[in-house]
Image 1 (cartoon, helix red, strand yellow):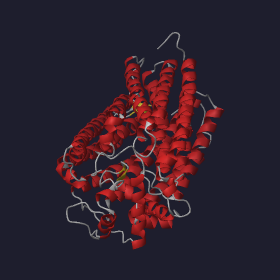
Image 2: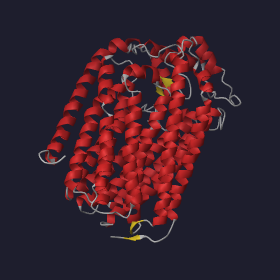
Image 3: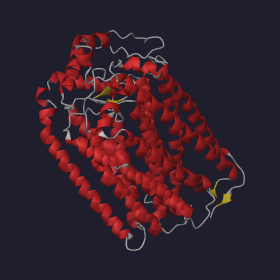
Length: 458
Length: 142
């Protein structure tokens, strides 16, 4: 690697992969609970296992974002990280706080956890994805601020590239919009309104800037295409992201008590949200086709192309599928939403973090790229996990269409549980596909331990 | 994308576009909040409803259920449950959940709520049902 301090990224990446494994194991648990309702009940009820599944996802992605930024920023700014020690200290704080939170979820009933952690002082818990106890939320703020301080000062003392600037806007946005997780008014409509300022403005807003910056960085490194070209693309993509995505928040304001005009604003702007993802796909393929060098790390290029395609399919196409208000009236809160969530998160965010790890980890381990053998294994894991998520999404979509039909569109609507039983076959297929995903993940981890003839460090 | 369209133009459009659309979003949000009192029935929120919301949150109900369509998709929508089951029926359902679950089936945990807590939860759910949410869900099954 070019700068010694980039090495702090390594523990972040390792932790991200470890937590990713936990996320998938709990995903398999809740997938099984969908069809064997009393599996692990009452020891680990569905809500607890789901919370572990989603929170681990968020935390491992944050580890990946931070690791990616610590790796990328010194290289972009052409200077050592402002404080590698602070970065390492924050790593341990975040890991311990994260682990303690998960243990808390699993060890005591959620209501007890709320009492123990002072939810009475400031009620922030019990809202989807923001279930973390108050001390954890405060810990996230501390870690995020220390991280931003570190990264920002590094950029300020070094070269300020467009990629760094886009990443900084994304990361600062991430921190600022997280603050809305502390606002929980007793008025449930206002609560939900601002809940989306964290959730939507993260995943359909500022996180896409982080995605774009990482993608642009890896494309520059692996294709050798002129920085000016790549950075221009990046600006166009993130512009499209924010001008569609900010007002696109409106697609969450159809049925929660907010005025009906959001059905127009939300439908029109969120219908445009696939465009930046499509641009990202075109961008990735275009740059790889115009490459000026053959980078030895073929696996990283595969992840880069993959994240473009899968983000477009998962976030773009599957988002569009149910974003228009007249469609969403029937699909809102069904398995269609779950289908979209799975492919969008995997395609846009899991894959971009895996791309960063794929590119950076060999260099952090002192070589330009892994051995051919290790890369072949990694590419197998790419195809297994990606194919699995495609089929998980297709099965959940089928389940969702049937659910909408049976429970909402038919002349004799069935009760929720009656409809669930009729679509159980699709939940079984999803579960088995989840096992394939896990196999892919195990192969992915195995690829780190395969030797062979490695490409020497540049 | 080459020639006349330069990187600094792209950058300016990015910052300008972002600021413009964020301000537009703020304006729409501001307007929404001026309209909300007529729709969210805030005048009716009692301490009991507030307590119900707290219980809703501290027991992570959203981890299985949806409320106005948001949440997990493992258990039924509760925004209209007071219409589907009635207030007494809703309370009876929560109270009667077997501690060890139901063999092979999904079951809600037994939360051992007091009568007062049950009343608060139902008051909260009744309040949610009264919110003008553009006629969602499509039917009583949620």
